[in-house]
Every structure is written in structure tokens, then in C-alpha cells.
Image (tube, rainbow, N blue to C red; front, top):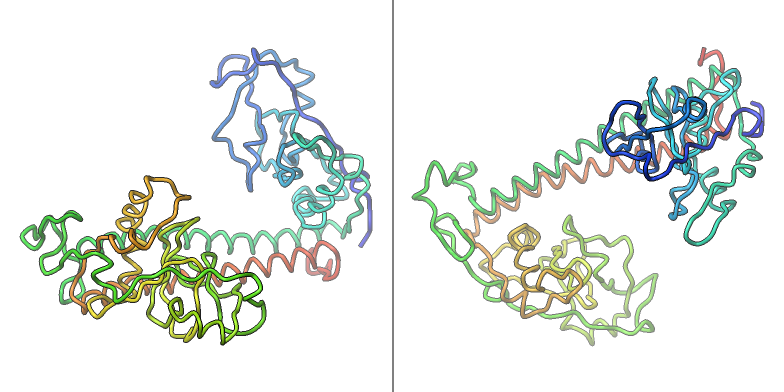
Length: 426
């Protein structure tokens, strides 16, 4: 595997510049579409094009986004955007703008898609951030430095095989991401229906259009007969705010877990990054100690976001988050589902005047209106939502596994630590 300078196997080309009177939002005679920074995302997007008139033929030829060219962000106010790159897969009529850099490969030595993988790798992206030039307002890619960067260049058949391996993995990741998107949409609709219509004895959703007599009008709109409306305060044994502790009172390694806003997610409690307090402090702050089945609700940042303390966390304390201890008339999982739903969040936002950075207080939590089914129906509703949540968690773990695998493969294959035999690649 040869080590070569990037500048030895590519040619760089800056894009076209134009004046304001040459730019148009619509196509027309003599106008040519131009790709700009917004068109360079994870893939090429052409949803927001501008069209240029009066561009000389020589400039068109020099700045044409021809098939096989790589386009990279060359100038931007956000340093993390510098070097973002895509490849032009098909013949096109596009030009590319001056804040982009065109990269043309010597196809006798390097494949465009292989070089694209290299340009988007962590090593080169980190190098570009270190070597970029410009003021605080606008950063520019350092092309001489990029030209001097040395890359590992296997034979063309091996490059092709590496690209195929990584493309196949990307396709798997794409499918999992789309599955997660679809599941999230399905869950949103299911929860909305469950909390509005409930379920019959056989587990089917009620339908207010088919069985209007089964519903009644309330302060929360239509709810099934047999349900009631109550405040969260009436349904809870107690609602309090977690203590505020001094930095000297918590530790990073051991003791009683201390939950903060960052640990509370609508998808459940995240205890991957908790701090700890001593047993003595925990005992002295019993008011804000939580047990399995209690609810914890964020006050600021993403106010109203609620999670249930799981059985796997038998002892914990809380910092500046609302603790709700449900009474005997409401299931913890159902109440959390309600607070996190559109109907719950709407009340939280109205309580804050729509400003997300205001505090969500105990008094507002107590005043939150809840549609309360019988306990057995609450359990079915929570179970139906939890089944989708488990599927989402499975897909999220699969996505994490594939993403980690891709990162490892990119590092191994593009640096030559793991080689693809030319015989297998040909």
C-alpha cells in the first residue's frame, strides 16, 4: 500500500463567483443552476438552487460540477463545516460556487468514492480544523496543507472493494434510521389515540366517530365515559422539588446516585452520567429521595420531560427536579406517558407562557389536568406504548452497533491496518 500526498493524485478547483444582478431564484433562458454550501449535506441536495446568468463559457467549463467531481465546503463561519464533502454521481448542468472546492481525482491512481471516504474520515477532518485559515467570522480550507496530507493508497481493485464494504454498511445504517423514524411517527400517533380514546375490554381502540355515545366533553376535550379528569396534585401522594447540593457534596465514582435534569429523558431515565452523594447526606435529605415508581420531571431546559424511577434504581436522590409520588388511583407509567404527551406538554407550555426557558414549578405540576381511565385500562395503555418503546430501544442499539462498526472499519481500512486482498477485490 503506497503512501502519497493528496496533492499528487488530485486537482483542486475553486468555484464560480457572481454579482447580485446575475443571481435568480427561477430557471430561465441562458441561466445555469449553481450548487452552494446549503446543497452540501450528508448527500447532495438540490432543493434550494439559485440560477446564474451572464456566466462566460470558459468559466462554465472550469467550474462545472461534472460527474466524478468531489465538492467540499471551502469557506464557512462554522469551522465544523469546513471539508464537508459529497461526490457528483451523475452528469449534471450544475456549476459550483466559490465557497466550495472542486476535487478532481487522477482516476489512474485513486477512485473518487475512495477519496471521498478519506476526506470525510476523522483524521483528515481533524487535520483540516487545525490547519484552516481566516478570521473568527469566516474560516477557509488550507489547500496547500491538504495537498501535503499523506494518505494510504491501495491498488484500485482494493479501493473498490473497500468502498463496497463501507457502502453496504451505510445502506444498513440508513435502513435502521428510517425504521426508527417510522416507529417514532407510529408511536406518536398510537399514544395520541390511546390517551384520547382508550381501549375496549378486548384491547381495541375506541372510535368516537363510530361510538359517539361512548364519549363525553370535558375540560380536556372528548374523553371516554368511565374516565374522569383530575389534577396531578389530586392523583399524587406528594409533589416536591429535589434539593440543591453544593459541588463539595457530590462525587463522580460511588455513593447514592444523584439525578439531574440531564438524566431525565421522555424515553426513560438515563443513568449513564450521574453524580453521587454520601449515604449520610442522602439520609439527611430524605425529602428528595426517590424510589421505584416515583416520577421525576425537568423544571428548566426541556421543562415537563418526565421519567419513571425504574426498579433497577432502588435508591437515589434528586437535584432541582420535580418529584411526583403517585397515589393509588394512577399507574406511574400511565401518568408519565400523559405528562410527556402532546396534551401534557401543551399544558406545560401554556403554564410558561410558551417560553421554554422559564421554570416549571411544583404548583404548575399540581395543576396539570390528567384524563384518568380505570387502573386496568391505564395498565393496558402504558403496556401498548412500552411495547413500541422496546422496539425503538432495540433499533437504537442496533444503530449504535452499526455506527461503531462503521467507525472502526473506516479507521482500519483507510489506514491500511486491515488490508483487503487484491485477489478478493478483483
